[in-house]
Length: 136
Image (cartoon, rainbow, N blue to C red):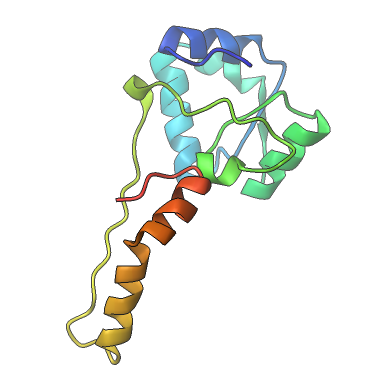
């Protein structure tokens, strides 16, 4: 497995890759571009980047060998054909946090509250972790 445990290790791994699949035209792609800039490898990664139109195509590009690495949201990269290396180092990580609220004028507030309760349940937490995310 490639070493991505530190920013320097991630830099070495990215520069050693022949091709990296991602979606540059996305919010995550913008963050990846920032990471490349922070690591001082933006120019070097331009030639290695294999732009994909959507998340499924990232997995396809890696599984087919078109790209050696896929770089995107962890929960998107979960595919039985891929080996997950892990998240980028904590120093480069930007967590996405989702909040829930029930609208004051919800037409079915009891249903909305039950849905929120389900999303916060241990059963849902297991599913969320299984998709590479951390439950709240």
